[in-house]
Length: 299
Image 1 (cartoon, rainbow, N blue to C red):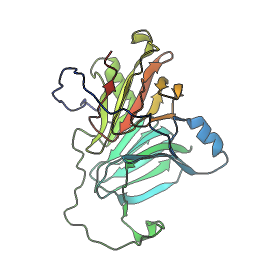
Image 2: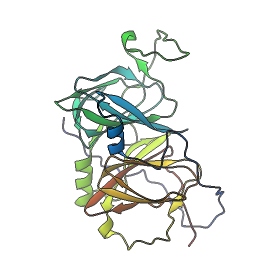
Image 3: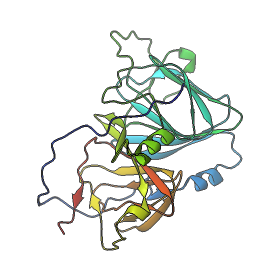
């Protein structure tokens, strides 16, 4: 199935003019495992070299949870759903065939951004001749309900109960979310001027993913004194989809992230992401608030 272009930007809100307030700002947020300023995909691959398949937890905070998955052709996630949460995936390498209740099956390839809303059955399988690298994200605390008992994994301290689910919501994407959006189509929409600004790929009351695409060459000259902004109530992190992104991070210094890398910034930590290098750059920004507050130095 041909991916469908996301046509909507972030939802319209009435923005107040810039004003000066007094916000709490303590020490920059501490990094606790598994979080680190940057997780490089090349390092993950090197650490797991020789393993046929692996999963590594990258983000696990009070809002979101993300893992990198490396899987061989034939690997299948059994039919399941999340009772109260949305999940999404970015395919970084390989081919993955998704079957999502209420949507036609489709094959996701490098650059595919896929999501499934709550209470909607899904399964996926790695296809083709090469392994797949998948970045998977869910809302913190999510549970998984399986269609077949044989698919249920061992969970410490929990049993699997046979249950009936009345009035299950199926395929309620809402907020202009789409099952499948491809990087190339969104990028082309921005390049041709059909789409402008930050493109909302995933929107949920408890999480968001924004497609931020552009060129360093089209930005004003770099101002080393610019600390950027901080978020008072939640962390933010980015999966680099293309090119390079430059991040000055309070107390960490400057980090240059490449395609496939993940950069994480805790709450109350100044940061100033900027497209970098030659050519187009793109980051998928994720956090637990669809309209997260950005607090800047007044000057």
